[in-house]
Length: 317
Ligand SMILES: [Zn+2]
Image (tube, rainbow, N blue to C red):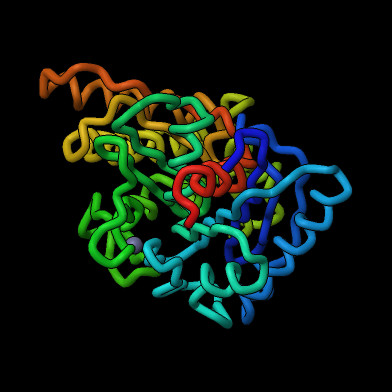
């Protein structure tokens, strides 16, 4: 493939399908976003690629390959979706369907894996041979690169850090287990801890931002914490400390050069990330480990699109 050719990157989740034209230097040239058809995930991907190919014609950009990052368990060798929790793929053989339709090399992988590859090729972890990405939203997605290669597991279901157990007596998770990392450290945990917090302290400033106790969001808690509300700060500190515990587990298993943090919840900022870093330092220092770098993604909200394109440049077939 010639250096000047661009790739199409597609990032499909349970609510949105996003795509873009990405240059071989990682620049995003054109972007589209639609609601996912939750009963026809593959059709949603094909429609997005079709739209971007038309745009590439108008822009005079040659497309050399297609990369897809998809929510779920993916067999990346065949580009087949094995299982997806919130989305039906009308044709699980996504790579085959795209190749037949567009006649270009294709790679399909788990969305977190694609984003992790993007960090290595174009992002804050450029050149790192060992890195971890934690994407913190409502839950936690994760990807790992070990000795320069993505960790995919035997069946494509590996690297699910969000469902490792941090507290066996903790809250029930949608995956069927109790006390999963994502139940204690991500957006859902912040909302739950805040509901408990305002029940104890009804005068908390959190209720000045939320319409009801049931509707408290991480953003409401972040706003209250920005005004130094004690309950809000305590909630973010507890969730942040749980993130630090999870990161120390990552360090114990993978010994990465860098842990990259992405996802909407990192916008909460220091009241959450500070305690996470402190907890990680405390736990790694007690083990006399060398400090590990913790960075926030430099690819921002588009890391899924750019990562899928990065994977296409390197691994589409
Ligand atoms: Zn779980």
